[in-house]
Amino acid sequence: MKHEVTANLAAEFKKNQKVLTAIGDETRQAILMALIQGQQDPGMRVGEIKEKTHLSRPAVSHHLKILKEAQIISLRKEGTMNYYHLDAKSKLKSLKNLVDQIEMLLSQCE
Amino acid sequence: MKHEVTANLAAEFKKNQKVLTAIGDETRQAILMALIQGQQDPGMRVGEIKEKTHLSRPAVSHHLKILKEAQIISLRKEGTMNYYHLDAKSKLKSLKNLVDQIEMLLSQCE
DNA sequence: TTCAATCGTTTAATTTTTTGGACGAATAAA
DNA sequence: TTTATTCGTCCAAAAAATTAAACGATTGAA
Image (cartoon, rainbow over all chains, first blue to last red; front, side, top):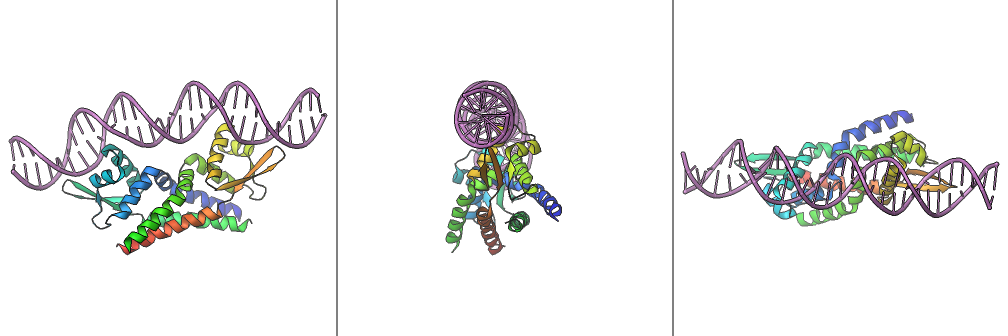
């Protein structure tokens, strides 16, 4: 049934909406790249992200917040320092699911 | 080699940048949903997209242009009518590749 | 040719997002 | 306690994206 497929797809889109918006921005993509290039284990401090991206601290904070609320990154507090790291397993899985469903729909209609 | 992985990933991010920006917007997601819910074969006319999304025609045109430049949709002209339809196979594949690479990186570091 | 229909573009206004200075909170060291 | 460090937040300004009215182009019908 087509309606079933599209209903699922709509739900899947909604589920991924925040993630898509979060990563659909070059500045945040740059932050993610910085995190990827750094050590995953302790994570990266805000100051270091700030240096690597040439952004002000409020700007970094702003984007980190968006990424965090989209559940793409997490932080671990240690003293006055905040270590940010990628934490996107669940959301990546969901995103892949969305892509798969669109692919399925398209292959049905060729 | 970690550097190799991250270099690939950076390239993959760049390759997907336009797509990510294009679909990282609720209005454009709504347009995509409308296209998905309609017939793929002839596609959907601008007027119909306009009705389904409650947007003005210039707004629809604006977003269709962004989606088209991101190679997510295509159009077929027929008389004065333009039929838009999903055409995202290549970009979906690329996007899935990006997601896979990030997943690989994360699974290495747990 | 003339008229109607469909659609893209231009432009200015509105809205949203992003940015950085100033400030405050929390922690640790002196 | 006092001082220094790290970081988030507030807020006003700047920048970017979005919007709709007006206009023009193209096609087909009358």
